Length: 148
Image (tube, rainbow, N blue to C red; front, side, top):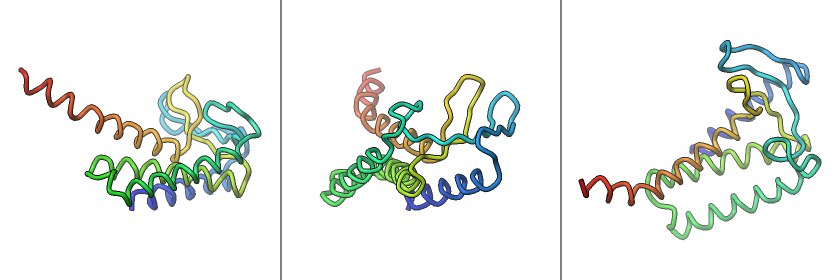
């Protein structure tokens, strides 16, 4: 369910940006904290590997297939891992859709004055990664807290 909501929100936001902004245009949203800047990225994170986006679409599909495989085997159990996999799948699919249809990814979110340009799919991937980290640290942190 999380993955479906992520894809819908991501694609709707990107559609709005493509429909209402000119490439390179910036709209201040929250002074000093958040602005929308319309950018098309044909590469990967931080605009690396420009022009190789189609390969990242293939990698995203393989990644999603792996997540479904491990979920089906029952290896991604628990609230945290299920939420993490939902965010990761939704984010991967959101950007893969852009790569397949537009041959590039629409980015528009700029946080602060020195950050990169992201989209909602990127934020979902970061949230999923953070939740995986929380899951991995849950056991060691619990042991440290219980020793006190």
